[in-house]
Length: 448
Image (cartoon, rainbow, N blue to C red):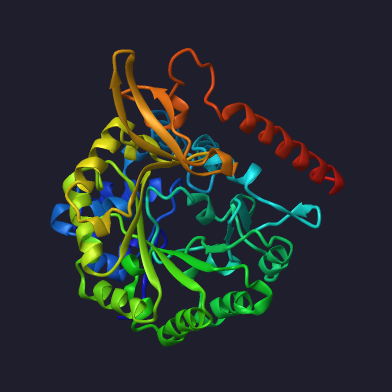
């Protein structure tokens, strides 16, 4: 199959969409001004159940609907449309709404970007001591976009909103002075949208003796779901698999961090062949997904998802809480429900699948894991811990929060008993101050 992308410019070419009322199409077109739309012929023909549209989960993952905007935002964009899509009124409304959708959650632009030679190392994030995230400039898109994506600003054609490496050698230069780093995560966008030749350019230097401290290379991707032919039929598929073998042959671990949000994505012959091809190189496939209302918010879906992954040789890794950005109000699930969905699904899979951790919030201080819900004579509490943290000393230290059945994020929780702050908050505040001061100095030195 040859890849064909569909964006707002050619959505009318999707014959299945032509079966729906014109207003249905126009709504998608309007909302795409806020949430970028991109899908492809594989998703359209193999994954979406068009008889179940608009309720089909894969359709909802690819095409926005009006509920993904709060009423105030929907009214604002609809009113602005009266002036025309090319008007200043429309452009202003779009920009204002985007800024109100928390485009870069967990302070990732302010505090995750490290310094190199006294300047921000653009295209890198270094939040946790052992792991550096790398955003290659060629990987600033995906084979298809998810409506729940927490990195949606990467796709809106606003350069200042993107996280990307403009210097090709910035990763190796940074690693030379940071021997504490053991893991590199290639992310985006989707790094596997990049040609194999360019991907090899980035990966091959990491295999030299100079970087013996790098033990693991990870590649975050949804290609196994949205374009499995990347591994089997594309013109450079074999070269891609050879890169995987090269990494393994140099005694590094290669982990494909695969995003599967619904078991439907695992059912196609194309995806199953692609998984087999990857595993035969010696690479591991670890799987992760946010828990999403309207998509996978039931223990039955997760049980089937994890069981299928295990059967295909994948390793269940994370269940995330939907990030506090974009259409969070549409996809969010209360933490108490999330925990019960996780617990019920987890209890129905074998020990091999109990590698999966969750529900987890990727928040400003770190990955906060909901361990359980505790009922005592003193009240009801969430038991929480850090799986990863800005300060490694916080990791695996359980702490309690007052039970709040409506809470969907850590910001909506309060410390238990008479504590005014969680144990990590004062230190995080100090980290934020220091990071802000560093940024102020940098901007001043740059004369901006």
